Image 1: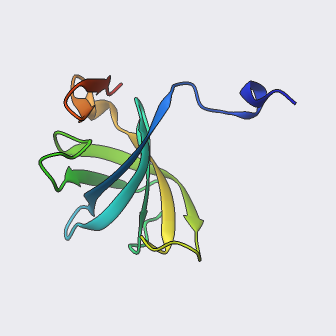
Image 2: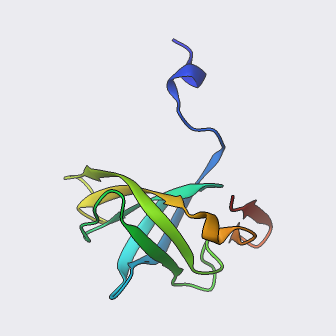
Image 3: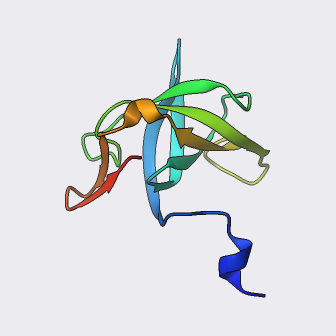
Amino acid sequence: MNTNQMSRRREERHTEIDTVKVGIDRPVYAQVLNISNNGLCLETDLYLEKGQHHYIYPTLSTSVLDKRYYGEVRWRQNINDSFSGRYRYGIFFSPLNRNRAASANSSRYLDIL
């Protein structure tokens, strides 16, 4: 079976290992696993509901994110074999992030939406 037919992704994603904070009132640490133009995949112990909106904050000066982003939790997966969290999430960036950019290594830029 063709792997292109199996994937629902419309854009390229980049594997990134990064630490960010996610949340509204009291953000907690999360590990970014990959990022694309429209969102990111992360792991954390924080339980988030599908459909909730949260801010994603960079924590390091070398972070893949250069600014605060806002996004919606599109999916959640319980994981038992991870060192970085109990849950894995797919977060879709909100249109509010238009004209912002995520950078990795300051030489590559991903235009968000």
